Each structure stands twice: as structure tokens, then as C-alpha cells.
Image 1: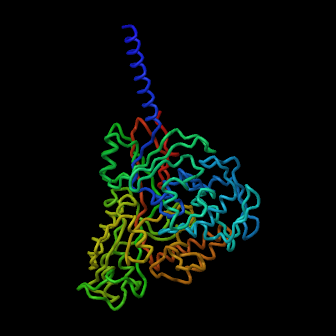
Image 2: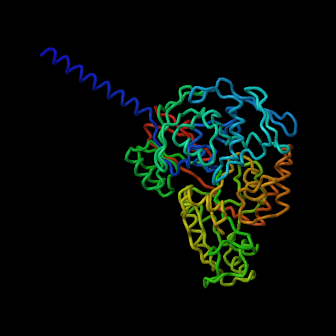
Image 3: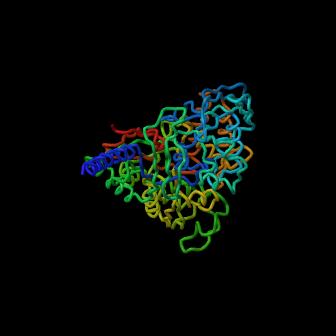
Length: 532
């Protein structure tokens, strides 16, 4: 009996210890619900925000965008201009990859050179487009030879993810995704190691205790993709998630009243903008006469029609009603905190009568029909804002077929030029307007390496010169002036119509986690700490 009693006590104690240990492990696991996850585990596959946000945990960059978009050292400790076309970057010593190998200049050179080879539907080439050649000076010094003066090269490198040249050697565009998704090539230097990924499901990461920076409090980080807003909120309230991103505006007030939930909000650098087709021959079925017949010419190529669409959109209503206060009306493609923002530009007007008058002058007194595509799961409020714009255009005689589209489908189709009118969000992630304007307002020019995301035919030599001059202007004041002029030209040419800046909200278990929100909306485990 004594033996049995001793065994029973030992079992009870063992059970209690196991339970305590399980509780400790659970307490070290951070599980968040995200609206969108990565499209691959290869960080060079696509430039989409949700992709980069996820993979910042596994792969480091040369420079880092701070919480306010200030440029900070990361894998590069310092950098300087050697001559007008040469930047020198000094690399951090003692950094280990997740497989224990050393990080060196060879990995930097390899990563820069593989991007043009493997980049996918939303090209990441934008981050290395100024680099003509990468030279290894020594294991911890790299010289980047640029195609001209490149004053903002350190800004571009916030998305230059460094992969292991050993783990990713020999991979092609056809084989890279499989190798990274399996974990074989997913070897980074970030604070978390890749464990597993289920597309449209869970991305599971474990803390890398050999990380060169501060130790993370979370032993495991799970990023659960839950695109349905209501489901994400329900899982948070049920305790299945510690934190959720992109809380729908309709739920913010109710969650704030929940004693177990904490809500944090921030004004982001993302701007919803409507892109308008200026090509002579838009895709079939995108723009038609009211009776469904083919129009003799593209009405969107007429500046009066683009202005009419602009005037028909009530940005105040979109910000306050459609986005329930989580948006702000904007008059340019970048927000106020961005270098190159033009403070002198007036607000966009709302004038239905003026819009109708312009349509009549352009030869469309009864309007026309257009298909309007927009994302439905990328940024807070995107679907409702898109639907509301469609209704506003109906008031001036333009019949709009609203096509809310998953981001995974929208962006490749948009890049292929399949939409004549579309809306998505663009964030000036580098903190400088040139990043945005050179990508979407410069003509699509592979030689100049600008306009990669301008696929609908907009071309203005004045705009191109402003942006080309800004790209090589080392004087900060002169560069700011050039970018301000480019923002003003967008206002008059209207290749894209800036609509509203996007606010974002996070909700979390009050007794478990707290977050430091970022203006680029990235939700990083590194910015989330235990409450206790």
C-alpha cells in the first residue's frame, strides 16, 4: 500500500509538473490571426506587403524600417557614399544563419543577383533596380555600383531580404518556391526559424536562440491566415487567437467595450487609389457603351472623363462612413509624413454637377459602362470603399460593375494589365515619395528601371524627367522640390486618383499581449510583448 501511495503521489506531482510545463510553453506561444499571409516562403518571390511582413521574421534585410519608417542598421551596420556611383556597406559580424553557418558578403551578393531571376507576379526588382554590380571587398564589406547617383539606396534595401547562398544555390524560378516552402532553402538570419507553412493556413515559426539581436519572448510564433473578418474577430473573442490584425471598423467600438480585449489603432502610410486606363485599346469587355456595344475610343483616355470621375467621389463620406472613421481623405498618393509630400496642394473637390458637365463635354452625356476591380481582403475597408465608389459613379451616369477580388488574384491580373479601372492600396514604405511615384507614375520604362507598376499607358515626359532627376539628386532640398512637383502633376493628369489614407486597428487579449503599432501596418512578433 505504501508503494501504491508513493506511486500515486508521484503521479499527481508529475501531472501537476507536466501541466505547469504545458502552461509555460503555451504562455510562450504567440498566435495571431492575419487577414493575409505569404504567397511563398521565398522572400524574393513577390513584393506584396503581407508576404514581406511574414518573412521579416525569418529573413533579415540590410537596412530596417523603424516604427516611424526611419532607416536603421540591420545586417548592415553602416554605409557611406564612396563616389557618385558607389555605396559601401559594412556588414554586421558574428551573424549566424539558422543552420549555424556564417553570414558574409557572399550571401548579400547572391541575394541581390538572384532577385531578377526568381521574382514573381509582383516584382521585387524594385528594391535592387539601381544596382548595376555588387562587389565583395572583403567578407564584411560590399560595394554596390549603381547606374548613376542613388541617394536613397539604403531606403530601397529595407526589403532586400538576405538568403543563404548555400541553401538557395542553383534554384530557378521554377524550383525556388518548392525548395523554400519545404523548408530546405528557408534558411535566414532572422529572429525566428521556419517550421512549417500551409498555404492560406498556418505559418509556424520557432524562436532562433542564435539570433544576433535581442532575444524574443515567444518560443513559438503562429501566424494563422483568417481572411474572413467576422471569423477573425470570433476566434479572438473565443480565446483561440492572442491578437488579430486589420480589425473591421464596424467591430472596433464593440471590442473596445469588451473588458478582456485591448484595441490599438494607427494612421498608416497606405493610400487607396483608383487607377484609370489610358491605353488606346483597353482589354475587351472592360469599358463599353451603355447598351453593351464597343465604344470607338477609350473614354478614360480623355482628361475630362478622368476629372469627372475624380469629382464624383466623395472622399469624406468614404473616410467617415465606408471606413467608419478609420480613413482620412487625401489629395496625393503619399501621406503627410512622407518626404516629398506637397503641402500646397488643395483638397480634392466633390462636385456631382461638375462631373456630369465634364462627361457631357467629353461626348458621354449618358455615361458609359466600366468594370471596376478592387481588392477584398488586402487592407481594412477595401471592399466597402470599392463598392461605395461604384455607387457614387452611378450618380453621374457611369454604370459600374463592382468586382471585389481576392488579393492573390487581383495583383497578378492587375500587373498583366487586365483591368481598365481598379483600386488597391499602396504604401510608401521607404518614407520617400520617389519609391511610390517612380513605380506607378513614371512611364513603364525598363531602360530607366521605373514604372514597373504603371501598366495602363500613362506617359508624360515632364513627369518622367522630374522622377529621373529626383533619382540622382543628392541635394535633399532639390530632391524634395522635384518630388513635390511630381505629386502636383499627378493631381492634374489623374492617371491615379488618391482616395483615402487607411487607418488600421489591432485587437488583442488584454491579459496576454500588447503591441507597438507601425505606420506601415506590419504586424511583427518583434513588436508584440507579453503583458506580464
